[in-house]
Image (cartoon, rainbow, N blue to C red; front, side):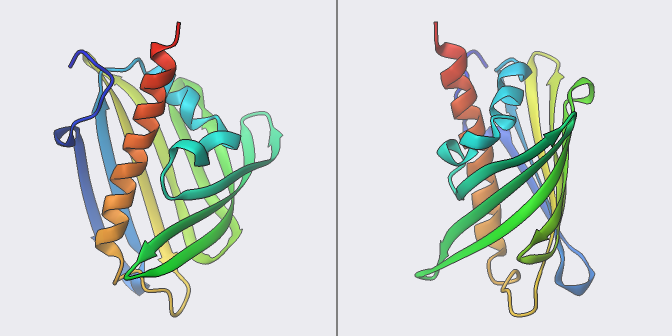
Length: 170
């Protein structure tokens, strides 16, 4: 791959059904970009909603060294209805490992935790996102599984496109 653009064959996904209605989703994207650009985009917390399609807002609440507190609101349409969810997450930056681990401390889910991992993988960069999510009673996670898959792939593409845009700047 010579450019920073993303084609569909660079995305790999899996979804696992866990007990009590929880889902584990994993999405990986391979890119020709330098991993530093992907990391820079992922840690631009105040601007994430500009380039992650279904993220309505992202706000930095606090920072204590490698620990970061964020408030994020996600929004998506499903069958003509608008669904939004708010979470406060604690995120830990581990730059040497290329990992951002997060877990919900407050919010609209029973469980919302996972990680972003950015690595050099041969001549390409690998961007991996893993999320374990469990809705509150009445939240239709089972109904929106396919939409979740599409949105997660689009989110990774959004990160990659912003990283490519930044890398192309003089």
